[in-house]
Structure formats: C-alpha cells, structure tokens
Image (cartoon, rainbow, N blue to C red):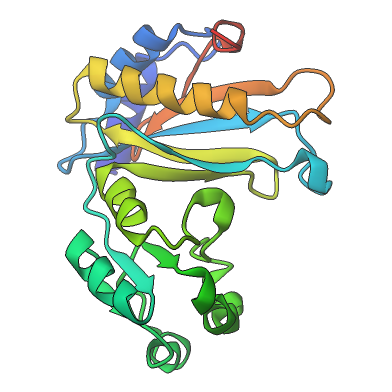
Length: 232
C-alpha cells in the first residue's frame, strides 16, 4: 500500500479544481514525483480535433531543447552508403531485409525509434502490422522517412519527440524527467505547445486545446490554464 499512501499525500498538494499556470504546474509536478526512480514528466493534451477525419489529424515531431532525459535507441533501415552514414551518426542498429524476420518472428524490439530511407519503405511496409500498433512505423511527417539519415538520427538523439492524436484525440508526450530543473521543463513544454499550436488543422472548429494536464509517472495530474497556452 506504500504507493497508494504516497500518491494520496502527493494528491493533497494538488487542487483538482484549480487551473494552474505553467510555472506553478511544473513546480507541483516535480514536488509530487517522489518515487525512488527518476520519473518521466508527461503532457497530456486533449484536443478539439476529430481524428476520424483526415483533415483533422495532428501529427508531427519537435526537438525538445533539453531532450527527454531518456537514452533513445535508433534502428535505421538503409542500404548502400546510407548504412555507413547511419552508423556514423550513432544509430544503434542498421540493416535491411534481414531484420524483418527478427522483428516479425522473434519479437525483437530493442529499439525506441525507427528511421528508414524512402527506398527501404517497401521492405519496412511489411512490418506495418507489428510496428504500427506500437507507434514505431517511420513516417515522413515525423521526419523518420528521409534520405538525410544523419539529421534524423542526430535530431532523435538530441531529444526529438513525435506527437500524434490517439483514438480519443489526446496527445501524450514526455517533456523530460523529474530531475530536470523547472526552467528546463518549462522550455521543453513551451516548445511542444508552440509546435502543437502551429500544427492546428484549419478544419478544426471551436476550441483546439481543450485541456492540458502535466503528470509524473507515479504522481497525480496537474491541470493547466489552457487559455494562457493558446498562441502565447
């Protein structure tokens, strides 16, 4: 019951009826992250989009100025001189067709992001059913289908995160770790919000950002004042 008790104590610090400013919210989330490990701080952004319509999809990627605090393992599908380029950029795994059975049949998933050159997408497409549900399928919008393998790997290692709507039109993304300073978390969060504001589909009517909650892995959610986040 330790976790329950700790969670209850942390939850007392958060007023559920209050919509906090970003700085207050970040300070609270850091205070309520009391686990023995370095908790991840996440943003959960509920949008007014209807993802069932193609013209209301929100998907993209942004490099967080201070990274996510997590070591990201990159797999690159490439051939020819792009193999050496990917290795030189620091990709953990580089390969081609020979990796398909390893992933498909042996359930090998020791990577966090997949990058592919466009000429490899025919091969990678065969993995759609296993990579798709895990959100690992390379995508041009996220910058993970590209001939510029060096930039793709460097950006990912520098703290590039992908954002997209889930089935309930919410975006869930990490913005750092509890060990980050409040300033680092605020910078990362603002960079993310700016990117999502810019990505607003023109077909969306009414309020775009419906609610924004910050939370640590084991802590309670802290709600933000959305009105202060729209275009500012």
